[in-house]
Picture (cartoon, rainbow, N blue to C red):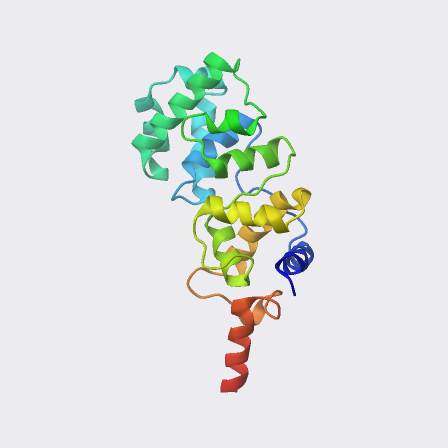
Length: 219
């Protein structure tokens, strides 16, 4: 099976296993998702969803959040960890949106990358989830699963994984597939102890096939 054929089979099986491919961060506006993605670094989405309720209640728009000091933002987002750096980036990002983009989030990838605290992962998430454009979000789940399945080989660099996936995944499938990687990574393909026996990809996954063969040998 070619890598492209493998990718297409993975897409179809994960579609069947996880019909709803949605971002697990709660947001109503694009700027809110920008804030949440920054807060989600080394923090769970569940915690971020709780913390931002107070943040967005106090600062209900880009202009209001841009007017807040980094210290005021940090006081609220501190439970997400790395409070000082995250608050600084959020403050700078909102100010740039206010001053250069009329408080609107741009729908251009390079423009998104120019925002403080926004990297390729965040920019792709915004492009895919907010603007419905082709996107591949290479977070830790995506990178782990792609290596285990065999879609990439011993590659941990997010940009290199993203570029490799663009070559084998239909553009319109990328965003949803990455959401399904997150769901599958949390439910089955755990970082420390993957449940290969209960995995819908086990017979086509590089790691899964080895695990199943080892289990049969021990039986």
